[in-house]
Image 1 (cartoon, rainbow, N blue to C red):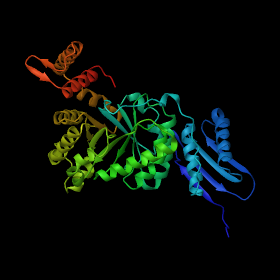
Image 2 (image 1 turned 45 degrees about the vertical axis):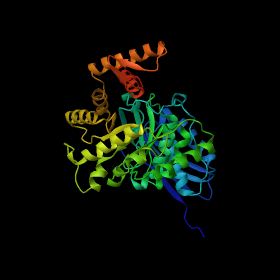
Image 3 (image 1 turned 120 degrees about the vertical axis):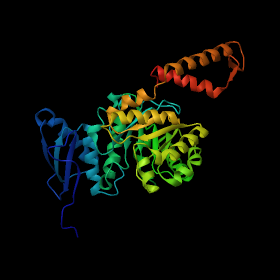
Image 4 (image 1 turned 180 degrees about the vertical axis):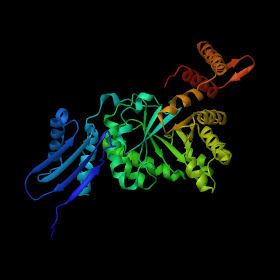
Length: 397
């Protein structure tokens, strides 16, 4: 027999919190909804906050409850995620989702060969980082459900990322999500696949079977939700075994758009430490590049973890490019311009690319099946690379 009221909470509270909120729900046997809202902007937004909370109470069939809401500038999509989580933590069998209406600016799509020089990681449980991320113009934004999220907040991140995919304007950056390591990551998919995610990153990938497993679940959800848009995959190789199997991973699915590496876990796996010079990871990074190129997908380098060392970042980007990488991860917006600059083609590369593309167009106009520049024959992959160089030089996506 139940003698105590059920209580749950979600979100963050305190003087240092911004763009977030704290929700506490105590189910009672009677008394209706007793709502206590604490907010610095109560005089401006109190009515709309109250209206949203009561709407969600009705949606989740809460009849009698004491509800405390401490608002620290949370937008409606954040409040919705925090409130829903509090309800879910009371009712583990809840099968309803309170979905914010899609922002029409978020309904754009992507392509397999899109330029991916930079991808900015955002912790999935920190909505304060979501709102302005697109203004920094990274090629991709990664909403992270894995390493940056504490184990106790994994459920919170799922709902925040789901709502962010629907509501936050990322200014046409590619919309990416890093799921958790399998098998937990399969559970993440139902919170992201229906909400116009472009690329799903598979962490600590060590086999083609893991890729196939993720893709099968994606396809199941797409069929269930009648989704036709393409969703691409980016396996992250983070172990010695993964490096050895890099090519079989890169060819596990036609929806793989890129292969990347995570050096913090890789160096730990081989029993060493990551250094600025990177000699300990040269073999692994070269394997990633070779596997990706052999599979016909992009090779993306790891993050540079010292956000204060901008010269070190420049050197790392130039080294990555010299190895054959086409992009690099970012953990702070200030890294994005340096990454873009480092992967920009040189004047000589642009001039050569123009000659190749012009020769291709001329041959095509004449109905010729062969392209040549001087005495050298130019095949299709070279033409494709030349076109990509021109796109990079013009800042096109």
